[in-house]
Length: 364
Image (cartoon, rainbow, N blue to C red; front, side):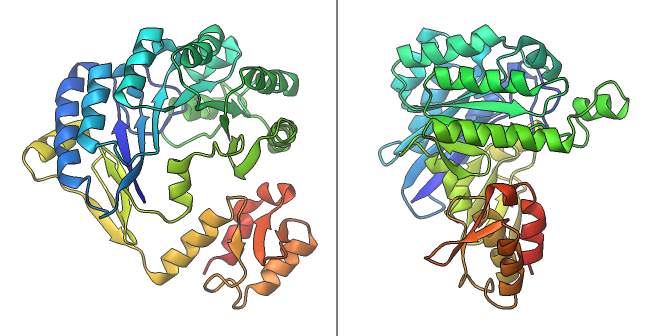
């Protein structure tokens, strides 16, 4: 089993908090897709395994035409794919568009909602409204999609606990199968971080952010959602198969500007520059960077990624039991970790709040 990630860097408008590689040069979509098709043809078999999951992310993939999406999926080949996800912006949605991409092979949608509060959407620089977000889910269902994920964001400046709970309730009322939820991050170089540094916005305090996260987890648990990764919740059998490959050490190919790949303990990545990517691909001379993970790197990644999931890590996993049982015992006594009867070490709800500190203690 292997996956392929397709990066679409185009956006009509850049969100204030985003630090992913993106561009508003929409007039270059056609030539970019042509370069993508060439890279796919050259690299889709790199893992030596059937492509079982495909994820089209960005950027904003929904600024591409259905014909673009169809050509990308035809180039990859979908005969072995069990999950084909595409990220979409609610402002781009029409029934005809969704029917077209579904006919092209997309069977899972990830809708970038973030909030159902218009004033918060405006603060984040999103170009859709709350009504458009709700309509997007309804339209997706009408188009025949039965596997829908939405993104929700908390710890947004001026966001209150009651408004956050309203967002959670609205999300649940839409009867989607998957919810990804993240606390707002102030990434270096983003417009949002500049606003914070200039004193124009005030971040939510850590205690309130933790309270919002706990409220989310509690509410979704009551709604039968499985909390299978720190930021991801799904109804039974609707966990993201593609994203799970990142946490489960499964190989994947990343195509497109700025895309990362992971094959046989080697990571590689394309330049996050539109001109360098397109010219490099067309000249068959793309300068990719790469690194091979050492045994230590591999161990640290298993700890870091494993503890983010509800499966955790096993006590016998590599060096986890060599000199680190005392660390695990201390965090177990303080109710930050739990050891199952099968010997798996899992972060508790309390432990998730200090997960980075726990991981740092267990790394070598």
